[in-house]
Amino acid sequence: MQTLVYAIGTLALCMLALWRHGRLSYPHSLSILGFLCGVPNYFKLSGVPPPKPLSHFDIDKAKPRPYRPFRWEYHQTMALKKMEPDWWIELESTYRERLAQRKALYAEHGKKVLNYLPGSESACTELMHMVIQFICARYPNQFQFDPFSGHFVNKILDAEVSTKEIAPLVFLLEHVPEDFLLTAEDEKTGLYHMRAGIACSAVGWNVDEKIGKPMHEIHRAVPDYDKMKLSIDRFFSKMPADKPIQRGSWGLEVGQPLFCQPDDPHFAFRNTQSASLRVEDIHLRVDWQTLRRLPQSKYIVFNFKALFTPITQFRTEPYIPRLVAKVIREGKRSILDYKGTDHVEHKALPALDEWAREQEEKGWVPKDWKERTLNEDPFFPGWEATV
Image (cartoon, rainbow, N blue to C red; front, side):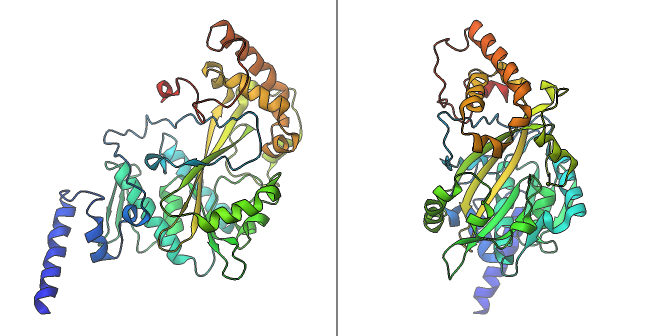
């Protein structure tokens, strides 16, 4: 027995030395490391492969992929797609700015931004470790993590932190510009309730008012959700850990409101059409979302990130002006009201029409093209050249 203990101890010390000298590959060594230090390999545990490393990633030059999740004919559905394993957490040049905003919002709003219920702690820790493993694998020159000590290094922020001494959700708030909502199945009803979350990009709602509620109550304001409720509940109950999904929602905003509550002065912009509004001030807001099951706790986690794009950028994006104009003019009014497009339509539509005519004249879009969901959805033809 002493020989076995000695052998395991020696192996642990050797692996620790290799790890700290950069000779132990991440994340392939995590199965043994997890056995020794209690942090399992979540790629193997979930069945979702690790991302391809971005060895030459430059945070200051990184652009987000240009998500344009416009569909026609438009129906209110979940519009789910298989998640791309490389893109679970996407970092780009607003990284430092967004994290500073998140810390300021938490300092000001507290539980409206971050909260958790008793019993969710282990799921929050599991999520933190999954995120750490992902960003260390995807961005190996920016992040390092020692699972033995819990020591995490963020080279972008020039920061170091012990993950054993910080609340998991606070860690995520301070190092990852994504929002996370954790839900768990209620043993009595079988419905999924929100048990913990960070939401620094919530518009019209907050974590504190939603925590503890089942999904149908959380989404009460969403048009036609009642029609989808049963199928969504069934989907949640059967969702496996190895099949995460992604989707996008969108709206049009004046400026770039990140966290905006009904009593915020900025919220008033949604109630009127300002004659002085400039097209340059109208932004597409896309909340790109992923949904996955945590393999150990069995919680289901939403994560989402708000991305803002001036609609003037649509001018050089083939098909997008005509498609957006079609959705705004002929889409279901209750859905468009929920998205909050009415307050900008008087300025956006004339501009979209003008850009659509320009694209036809340049030969980018056939004049007989019938508006439909693009084959490149959620992007557009030639989008790769923009990032």
